[in-house]
Length: 185
Image (cartoon, rainbow, N blue to C red; front, side):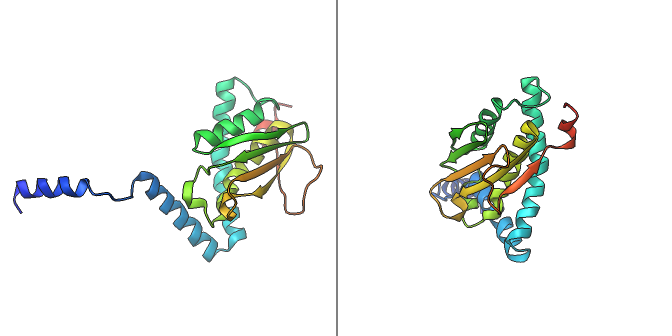
């Protein structure tokens, strides 16, 4: 193949309407990993694995917010705003539905993980762990109910972050303050 033919082929190929880009590559990678984990380890163990990754990721993200805000710990007033900001920076469409001293209820219309989350509820442990641990680090202990999720077929998500033990269901995931932030008390 001569150079001009190769250049012409390259231009032709690069102009093809192929529905694949970095977002689709990311979606395929995340969905494939979640699918493999859920099939080989089971949903519960896959959720634990993903939750472990989220714990480390969330600690780093929380540290960035605390440092930028000049605080050792987020205030209860800052917490819902930080959670929404974080999720939306990641590509979500989160918003505050309800907020009081007992709980924060967030809605969401778009998962930060895109289409990868569909049929992979273990990936929701990213949201549960990051939100739950940030809330626990703010108020001492917290719990998260993922009442509706895009991963399980809902049009959007409804995430309830309990700031005390009132109204907890049996399957509610509970979180305690990290040792690193407990020293500020």
